[in-house]
Image 1 (cartoon, one colour):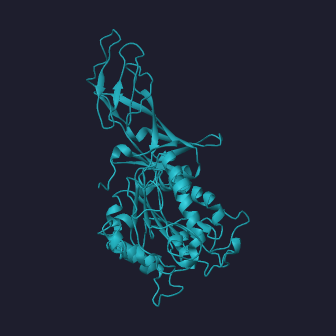
Image 2 (image 1 turned 90 degrees about the vertical axis):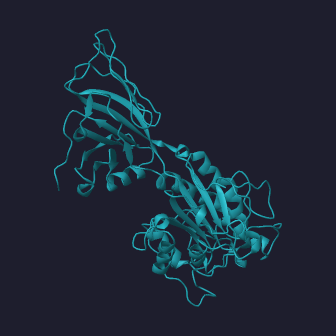
Image 3 (image 1 turned 30 degrees about the vertical axis):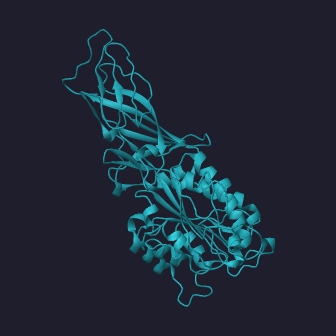
Length: 438
């Protein structure tokens, strides 16, 4: 069973577009056409770039980046000939680790989770076009759901279209291109331990061990961003664990398994969302943002008896810029799972870099004359970004060029991500755009 996704499956994020205008200087020996409207034509570069410049007429030109084409004219003999093309920002693939508490107190929440994974979470991710994969760490439901704190009621079963299982319950989970499961009982106090240990060991239950003989690690894809979503009404080590993990120990444990997937203990590369026992906001399904402080009061909705506010999980969410939701509001999990899916597709997946196409034969690009505008979604106009000479010289409203690509500096990238529906114009102008050092 393949565990990787080809580059052809990379999703196109339609919320943002880039407009690229190409400026070239003629080489001394350039052939400018035959005087009858014919011009130099060239097919070059990755992504299927085709550039055509006219002769003594205005000509026509198409520059395709990743198969996307635009139109425009390049006047013969001009010192700063231009052509335009539309390109789209693309998204990186994302692997989503969903960790669900299977303890007895979770029987009401698990039914709501099961419905929303199948009905809301997966459908939003699919419709967004993002190349996603869900890896579920939780006990599979093999029996009918009834009432009370029995194993089927605290387990989860995922069906089509996310998984390959036609109906629930089923004897075993059925994997698909988008869904994998490491089926083990997750207690209310050991979710982080299982995230570390389960990476490289099979589930303890022999019925499920053959599905993940090397742990869940082989289900993760190289180069895919990692998102962890945890749902529990307790706290790590709050009960039954005499030696609970600390956050540094958890981060060190994940990094020891794979820095490529999870980053280092000092700089974790994943986002940690949590649905836990913290108090509801006035809008009861609204998320706490990473900029909001740690919450000390427990949620009370739907007569839920919550053991803990989930302090450690809150700290992880704040540290990794994740969202926090109250677990008590399980009748409203549709809004919760939609919000998390939107965060995955809009924020986590956006890339802030652009390919630079190869120039046509006989012309050279002047990279110091690249200009970039952030086109604001609210119609307020454009924010012009200057060009930093290097990444090390990045400034708030700036970009740089490295490895033949245009990269937005971190502050500019964050501003574009936050401005949902914004655009980015990238053009090669006739004037030097390099910013003076700070």
